[in-house]
Structure formats: C-alpha cells, structure tokens
Image (cartoon, rainbow, N blue to C red; front, side, top):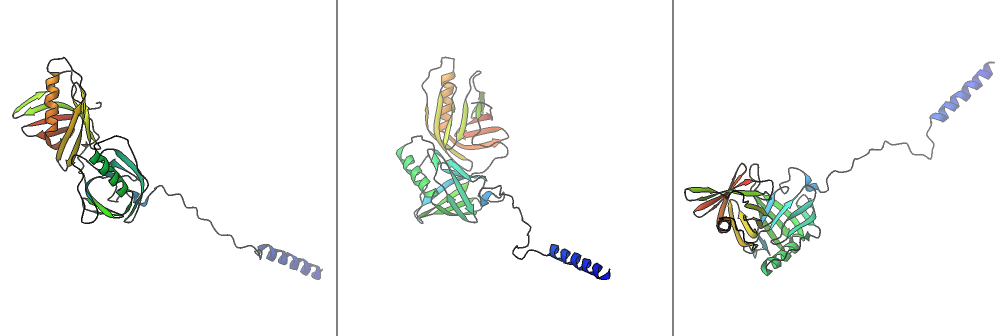
Length: 280
C-alpha cells in the first residue's frame, strides 16, 4: 500500500511541475501599454508658444541686408493657430496654409488664396511673399518681433496690439457721431453708416452707397486710401452730403482708439465715433 501511495504522490507532483512550467518555445507574456493618440497636429500648439494666436504684421522682407518694406497702402499679415493653420492677408488676397512648427523649425505647405485682382505692384509683391513664406525654414520670437528665415531671405513681423474686449479688426462698426472742433452731430435718422476692417480692406455702407478701400495700421496709427463707392443717388434730405462728409473724413483718418465698444477714428480737425453693431 505504501508503494502505491508513493507512486501516486510522484505522479501528482510531476503533473503540477509540468503545468507551472512555461513552454520552451513561447516567450513570457508582457503587459502592453496603450498610448492615446495626440490631440494636437503640431508641436507649436502649446498654449505658451509666443508664435500662436497673434496677428503679425509684416514690416520688411527680402534677401539679408536688402529687406524692403511692403508696397504703400498694402498690409501683409500672418496669424498662426494652434490647429496648425496660418492665415492672413497677402497684401491683396487672403491666404491660408497648413504649417508645422517644432522648436525653432517652421515649414509650410502650399498656400491657398482668394482670387481678387489688385494693382500690379500689390499682385507682384503678393506672389513674392507667398513664395517666400511657403519656403520658411525657421522662426524666432523676441518681444513683439517675429523673424522668419526662408531660403534666400528673411522676413520681419511685428505683433499688432490687442485691445481690451472688442478688436479693431473683423468687428462691424456703425457710425454714431461726427465731431468737428468742439461741435458734435449725430448721423441722420434712418441712415446707417458702417465700417469693417479686415485683411487690409475697409468696407461698409456710407449711408446710401457701398464703399471699399485699402487700409494700413501701425500700433495706434491708421491710413485709409483708394476709397471707391457705388454710384446710387439717394433723394432723402442731407443723405448724400453726409455720405461725402463721411468718406472724406474716413480718407483723412490718422489714428484710432477703442474704449469698451466704442471706436474713435481721429483726423485733423475732427473725429468719427462708432459703436459695435450686430449687422452691417
């Protein structure tokens, strides 16, 4: 009987040892770590990156030592978003492109743009600018200055100051008051005079006709030029005179300020005062 029990015990022990042993030809199991996909499309999407969410205005660009300022009455800008898209005004048309920024490296894909036709100097400059910025290789931000180096040249931008609350650009403004010297007068009842500044173009209604023009800004300075309008004639008393007064003042604007939701354009001898409006 003891021999039988010993034999059974040996068989049980051998079975347990076999079950616990790993097969000779199979590697041990390892825990797999699941890494979630990245939520950003570019490493420049860090919120503290000084490149992002700022409207940069081009000051000059070209070959080193031969940089030139933009053509008069044109405005070239660039805004880099955390989503990996840069957009702005190329001096005539609006443009957009995908970009990647890693450390100080910067690359852009081919840019798309609107198809508005402008005077030849502006169009030629636009083509040169888009060719240059899409050849970007590196960037650096120092204070309010952005420098982008591209093959064969470099471009220098300056940040456009943000206002508290309402922005100067892309905001619909409605004229409420003319100020000349010490005298202030409201717009004629029932008329609507508006202004929107975006991508280098000023546009709106002058009370009867639609108008548009080019603008440039630098800090608190502004210049509006090349103003054209439709040719409708309105018969209500004083409307056409008010329109002429407004367009002349707009073309003479020299500086701007924003206080809350009020925009003031100052020109020699007077002011145009606007409030934010919901419609143009």
